[in-house]
Length: 444
Image 1 (cartoon, rainbow, N blue to C red):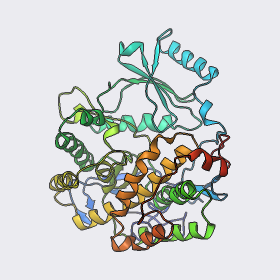
Image 2: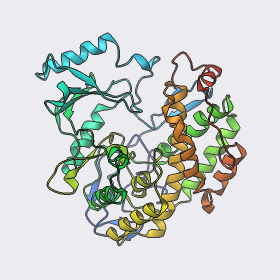
Image 3: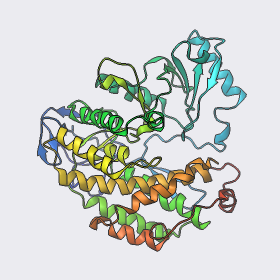
């Protein structure tokens, strides 16, 4: 990877095995613009289909960590977000209060939709809410994204960038970033998940999704200057969710600080041992729930993208892994392997061995993260629906623990009862909430 300048921001070794002064991967707060070179590196191999970044001289600065008290663990967590959202004590009221409804109506009035009938749509795992206007008559949805927890600016900017790359993100008629509202294109109801559940051929849908990724990963201008890197801080902030939330769920008590430290040390050693990856725009939540069938003139225009506001610049393997190792549905291993081969055939200069080791490590990291997120949704937010998926997530995690680089992680997980035995997720999660002091709506 080409780079300019020296690091003035971090003493931590570079995440991806670059030179120790490669500040692109070392910092989260000083990331500025990237000059994209159309010649490319795919895990160390030059390729016309993968972009290489040349970074400008970095500013001299310090990290601006935000320290957040975690009720479940009694420890402090470090956020990699340089602009953390304020802590909200009662999240259940954020977008359901009369005051919030008044704000919605004022926004709609300003967009010439005063008096429209709002039909609430099924809420996802975030704190965003969506409302269909007048039964879908106008083709627009109201997105309610409380600014206390949701980053509407990122959603708007990344959506525009995806459109510039030839992909379909919802068009935006009107937005109010300060109050967290946007009037966006209604993509309808045909998610890939619903199509699969109705009997649509999985091979067809997964092939379309895989082809979308190869299109994205071939774009030399896929990098967006405003995006942060998927660096060690970001990866660790996600991986640590397993000891911080899943272990308290199954044990009823916080993890011991020394065990948490050991878990973190294992992951840091794993990531600092990896080779240089091929990198691109990483959507981070790329799976069939967030893909929609649309009318369109080309295959790419027939797929609508959702939930992309957390995109970063990071390893290409992440989004393919996210698609094929879905926390919410079982995917036949033969189909997953077929899609990997389809991806490799479209990216002939990609180093397969490099891609595969990153794929496995990122899969283990994501499954640890998701087990923690699903536990947090129940314990912190009183949303237990996702607990049913945790056994699948742990099964996916265990499948990667034979990778030599991940064996220490496997030992730690087995020692704490996470894998290796038939694990039962507590039915009475509310009693765990009470034990952890979370039943009153406190947050992390």
